[in-house]
Image (tube, rainbow, N blue to C red):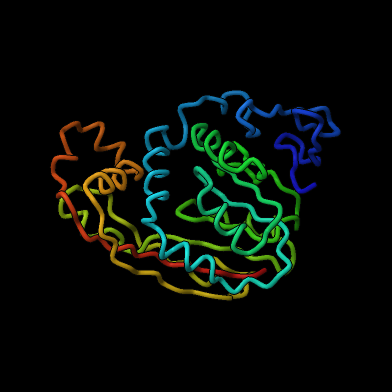
Length: 266
């Protein structure tokens, strides 16, 4: 079993509707099907993306806004067999589902801090094990136990990723470029996108496999533009400042999807 106890790092095994380790720690599956590995003060629900953010992201994904990225993920040069995939910051599980189906990966894990995200991900993917956990803590997986770990618009704990990957396993990173949705910024003051380059020193111990940029225009309605803003971290500031920012958006707008994919191998 790849999964480990966050308290003692012993293997976790399933026992009916809970997971237990040999040291007596136990974690119950929620009625929605996800497994929370948070404990004590970590259990508060007011952490991670909000329900409104998750719902907005779900509508954007279901509308096909990220289809060029989905196609690039489908075409990734992954050598089989890949038996397990873990997505960090999986949200509602959209990318996890696509990459698992495209590459025939039987065992899938998704990890997110947001309780609303893991509820929806578990409901959408009953065959996956969806975990509620915090990426600021060690990943709850044994050493060299996962074939593919992906971080798509999410944090990248590189040391932990390398620890959990098996020899020859893959790490996939997807992050926005500075011109991502740039046209939208003329109407709404979104947070700036930093220089997200992965430096060679950061990827020590990994072998490069693919490094590509996906850039494509997307013609979106006002409703979809609102959802793009509502799913982003900028929504917290916009909500605090108040105002009717949706009214600033045009009825239709062509915006640029611009992201970078980096695939490396341990």
